[in-house]
Every structure is written in C-alpha cells, then in structure tokens.
Image 1 (cartoon, rainbow, N blue to C red):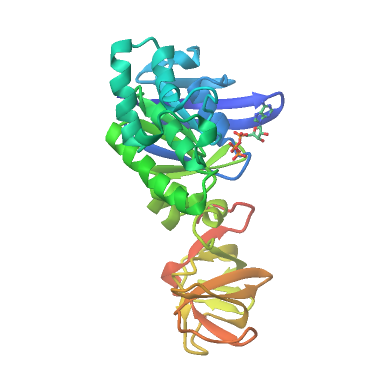
Image 2 (cartoon, helix red, strand yellow):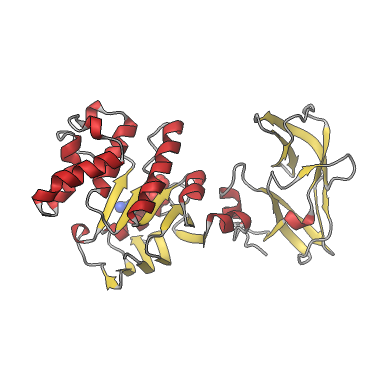
Length: 349
Ligand code: ATP
C-alpha cells in the first residue's frame, strides 16, 4: 500500500515560488506523470516527496503518516534519475546490490534479489562490467534494477529516458510501464515530453510556473484541456488556437467563419485539433485561406494556413497535392471546437 497525499505543498526560495500549493492524492499503485516545460517545478515536487528538499509549507502524507520530517533513507522510495547516478567503481552487480547493503537487509537474500532484478531488466550478461563499459540504455537499466531490487512502495523517476536515443526511448518506456505494473508500486514520473506522459500515465498533472494547470487522465487532458496552455502543450501538432470574436453563435476571425457555437458574445480563443478538421470542397469550408506550409508525413499530409499570424494546421489525406499559396477550404464542424476565454492561458468556457 502506498497512497501519497500532498496537502497544499509549496516550495519557496526567498520571494521565488518554485511550487505553489500543490494539492493532490495519488492512489496506491497509480502511475502519475508530472508534465510541464523546463522550470515549472516538476523536479522540486518530486524532491520534496523523496525528502531531498524540505517543503516550505504543506504536508506530505504516505499511507496516513506525515513524512515531512523523515530522512530520505527512511522513506520507502526509490529514485531513478536522468543521469543514472551509478557508482563508477562498482560493477553492475555491486551497483544493483548497493541499496540492499545500505538498508541492512538480510545478506543471505542479496544474491537472489540482485539476480532477479538483473534478469528483469535483461542485464545478466553484464554483471561484471563497470558503468563506463556500458551503453546509455544499459546504464539506465542498471539504474532501474537498483530501484526495483528492494521492492519499494514508491518509485520516483525524473526524466529517466531523456539521455536515450529515440528508438531506445520507446522500448525502455514500455519496459518501465511493464515494471511498474508488475511491481504494483506507486510511481511518480517527471517528464517534459507529452508523448511519454500520454503513453505512461494513469493520470497526468500539467504544471506551469509552479502551478498545477490540470489533473486528469491522458484522454481527459487531450479531449478537454482546462485552458489554452494545456491545449497548446498536449498533442502533436499542438491544438490550433485562433483569436476572434463571437456574435450570435458565430465565430469570426481572418479567413474564418464558424456558425452554431454555444459561446457568449465577445472575444474568445477558438481551438481545434488538426486531425478533427478536414479539407472541404471549395466554398463550403469554414476557413478559406492560402496554404502556408505543406508537409508530407508519410501516412498523411499536414497543411498549414495562417490566421492572424498564427499557424493553423489540418491533417489531409496522404494523396492530397497542392502548392503553397493555393487557397484551401477547411471544414471545422462546430462540435469539434473548443472555446476558451481570450486571455493569457484562457480558461475553457
Ligand atoms: P526541468 O524540466 O528543467 O528539470 P523542472 O520543472 O523540473 O524543470 P524545477 O527543477 O523543479 O523545474 O525548478 C523549478 C523552479 O525552481 C525553477 O525556476 C528553478 O530555477 C527553481 N529552483 C530550483 N532549485 C532552486 C534552488 N535551490 N534555489 C532557487 N531556485 C531554485
């Protein structure tokens, strides 16, 4: 069992607020991903849970017990860092065994536990090697084995894949998901990569400048972003966002007229995803504008037009052919539109 309650935790250094009133209960065995741009407070939040950083305010409660004053070694958490943090003078076997020695567990059990962990991450052939003689992916697997060897209640992972190449990232990502599921541990995982967040998480926490913007399942965050920051951070390409004006249920912007919206009169930001719109027969479209860019993606063609200086993209069939500058007609059914307040990080209406 490891339910983690973060009760209004904040971290300040002088007047600077690194994390502001983070309040969330993380369920036992949940895979929670903290997602946001560099400097938004993800790592600081995790370091407070690990005990590597004191919370300026708030309570950290694990299974009903307040752990704010507990030393990191007395919290039953294992961390995996981007940098791996392996001991260079120890071979793989000794690196994996290290947490067992430090915690004074029964030495008679060590060998079996190290071998099980090494087998779990396919390192049995490398046990005698020092970290310097391993590839980046192998080092990261040593770090994972070292985290799982003592079966902690909580895993904390800070950008564990960011030093791996694209292919290895995908396979290691799958391995982490699988491990976390098998070990039934509560996992908190930090990343700035929205694809990692979407593929791994039970729930995602999107942060900006120390403040939680939205908490939800990957689907909720993708389908109903709480504000334009979340809308533009999740999805590839990001959600199209257009500033314009609603009058009597009709949204107007440059080259654009969309009828039948449920939205108050006045300025709004309207959003839709590239894959939800489609190309329409000329004149029928709600956006009629010259093509600004055209990218062949293999399985589709991405077309962008410019509305008030902002790029608006639509996914077209892979067979679609046209020239930059040709007028294209885009169909944006009103039911796929997201409407936000026309302010910075405007809230969903
Ligand atoms: P990244 O993805 O770049 O690691 P992050 O979201 O993990 O970013 P944090 O490392 O949590 O961000 O940092 C949050 C903010 O707190 C940043 O603006 C950072 O500069 C600041 N910060 C972190 N540690 C300290 C410190 N010891 N003293 C002052 N400010 C700090």
